[in-house]
Image 1 (tube, rainbow, N blue to C red):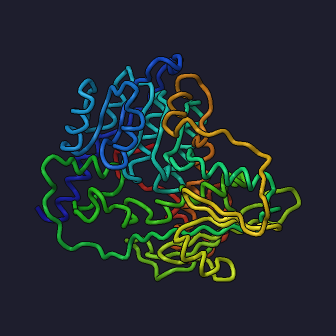
Image 2: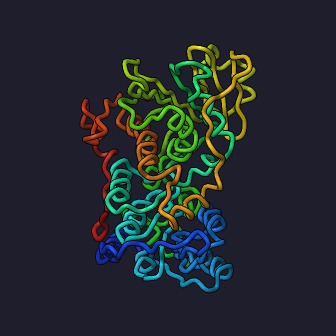
Image 3: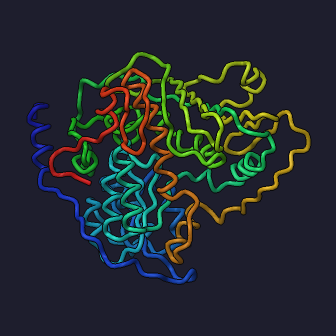
Length: 425
């Protein structure tokens, strides 16, 4: 089969697939001692970690485009019905809540369909591949009033809570700037020129979902898809929601107002191996100055006058808050206060019962979660805005309300999602 016929056949095969849009009755309210009926969209790799996190509940449905992964999960939960197409899972009536653990390019179609159907939703990070998809998920959660949580599991750990307490207690004074660096690299690859047959048991058309069809390659299925704009957003999309979660939480940040980048030449197919993004956020206090937040990945770190060489060696990835009285540096598991003796926070944040557990409890009782889509939507959009600025090749002045760059039209194609025929939100 030649490449042209392959793509035509894929497009034709997906043309009749329309997402269900019916909204079910209000989700049932059950006690904290009862078990939730959960459907899993994705069962392996990161999704399997999510499956383990919710596995104490009733797993009543499993969906995976890979028959081998699906069979393995089915052995763990033999009572669950199994599906290849997530839309058929959504048709199952007894599901209370749905976990989306697929690659980024199918997050939006699965999460929006789940919310429209009346189910609570847990979705892996980033919330979606594009800003427009992220906004659609956020708005669906608000419209249908469902309990949501993004998969930023570090948010539930003790270290982030202690850092937020210190910042919000004013221990380092007013925060004037933030630096976030992650020692991770994706991208830097050239598109393959040879395309082997699709492995037996993989429904590649469903794996592609809504994006324009391209031939199968092991360069993106099942593990390497983050290296390609077609499916993901590289290091910034992967880790931005984890590391920028800390300053967004501590300083109550939402949407940035601008973003400009420094990085390698733009590649139309692959994310940059390294990138520096200079975001600007609105003032965190009335009458204050805008807050700069700078992101670095691919081995880049703040300058030595910000991150001393001894700290740079110890903290290969981290977040630094620079305040008027001192500094705080943190990573996932530890933090350090610099320039303040006997720092004593006055704000107290209770420890979490667990990231998955708090979502489960909220689904049962109607209580809150700590990373609902109302919070994690703007967080994801901020991370993705850095990629937009890089791909557009210029600084972005951002109007979050209108979801557009006010200074250039070059960014629009990277802000909006584009689905093949038969797929819609």
